[in-house]
Image 1 (spheres, rainbow, N blue to C red):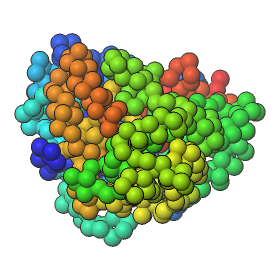
Image 2: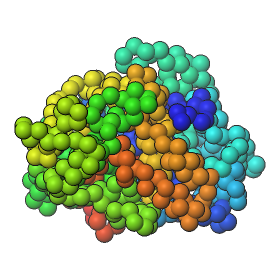
Image 3: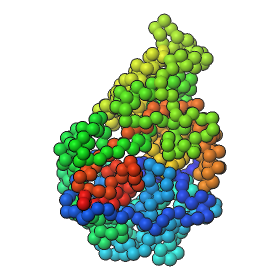
Image 4: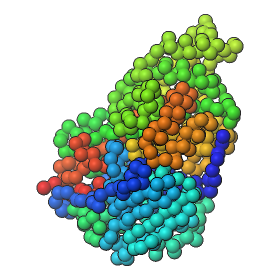
Length: 583
C-alpha cells in the first residue's frame, strides 16, 4: 500500500515541522479517553534576579544571517519559534509528563477523538498592544498555509474557547495541534496571504511562506526583536509578557559558521548558551563557569532501501542480509570510537529507553545487541542460501554481497561510524564499502531512494510515545516509488511498506486507550524488529552548555523541566522565560 489518504495539506505540516527543528507532525498524549482536561494553569516563571547582562546564544546560525522571523518559513531564525511566537502548550520530549500550558490553559477530547476543546489563557496581548483572541487561534489553524489536512473545522465558541473538529479520530495529532502549531496574529498575517517571493535556491514561494516578517514581528512570546544584521540579531524583554517580564533584559544570537569557532568562543566565555557536539565537554566545564547536560533523543540508523516492489535495488533488499548486518555491528565500539561515549543504547522498537519503556511489547528486545556476533551473522546468511567464498565473503548463486554505505562529507562522527561498520561487516563476511558524499547528494539520493545504505538520523518524538516514528518512517502512506522524490512531510526513506504495519498504525491513530495502542504497537514492533528497514545503531548525544555563573533557571539533571537546546522551539521560549541573573 503506497497511500490511503489525501496529502493536499502535507506541505503545511512539513513547514511546521521544519521550523520547529524536530520535524514532527503528530503524536499521542493528553487526557486519556478525553474524559478529563489536561494541563495546569501555570506557565514559565522567571527565576533569579533581573540583569542587564546580554545573554549571548549560538543556535547554529549560518553566516550571513538572513532576517526571517516567519514561523511558516523553512529558514526561520531560532528566536521566532518560542521567543516571539508560542504554541498552545509546550511538551517536554525528555519525560513522560503533562505538557506545560502556554497560550492554552487546558484541553479536552471528546470520547471518539473527533472534537478537541481548547480553553485559552486570559489576559494575553500581542507585543504591538492588540489583544490576543480566540479568533487568532482559529486563524492560525485555518489559513491556507497552515491548515492541516485532517482538520474539518475550527470555531471560537466564546472569547476563551476554541473547538477543533475532525472527520476522523485525531488523537494521534494532539502534539501537532497543541505543541507544534505556532499561534500568529490574524490582524498582521492576514495582510500577507498574497505575498510572493523565492527561497535561497530561487524556487518560487507564495502566500505566508513567502513573507520574511523581518521587521518588528508581532508575537506573544517573552522577547521582541530589537535589531538584525548579517552577523547577529538581538532581542529585548517583552515588558507585557503574560508570564511576567523576563529577568534577562536582552539577547544576542550570533552567527558562526563552524562548530570549532563556536566551541572556541564557548571556552573563552563569549557564548552563554549553545547546543553543539563537543567531544571533550570537560574542556568547557572544568572551570565551573558552565553547566552541561547531555540529552540523547534522536536515533542514528542505517537507512536501507529495502523494498524491491517499489524499485529498491542491491543486496540490502534481502532481509537476511539486513538481519546479518544488524548482528555483525559492534554498537559499543561505535559509541566509544565515533561518538566518544556520549550516545546511548537504542531500542529496535524505537521506543526511547527510560522514557517509553511501557510501549515495548512483551517478547520484543528492549535494546539492540551491543557487541558483534559474526557467527550469528553467518548462520543467518547460510540459512538464507549464502555461502562463504575463499575470499572470506558471502555470496549467493555466485553473486557476492557488496553494499555501498554513504555518509555526509564532514560529518566526522557519522563518517567514523561508517568506517567502523565497514570493518565489522567484513569480519562477518559482508563486503560493505563506506564512502562520503556531499550534503546535496545525500539529500537527493535519500528522497529519491537511489541508494543502498545511508548513515542517517531519525527524528525522535516530542512526547513519550513512538507513534510519530511508526507513522512517518515506517508507514507505506509516507513513501514513494524509487525515482520519485518523497513529498514534503514524507520520511519513509527506506520505501518500507507492510500492510499489517499500516493497519496497526491506523488503529493506533484512532484511539487514546493505552491498552489498544499497546496492542497495535506490538504488531508494528513484531514486523520492524524482524524486517529492519532501518538498522538501529545508537541514540545520538544532544549536548547543551550554559553559563551558570551569570544566569540561573537552566534545565538541569535534577530539574529537566524542558528539553534544553538553544535551537529547539517552542521549548527554548520556555527556558528563556525562566532565566534570571545570578544573585
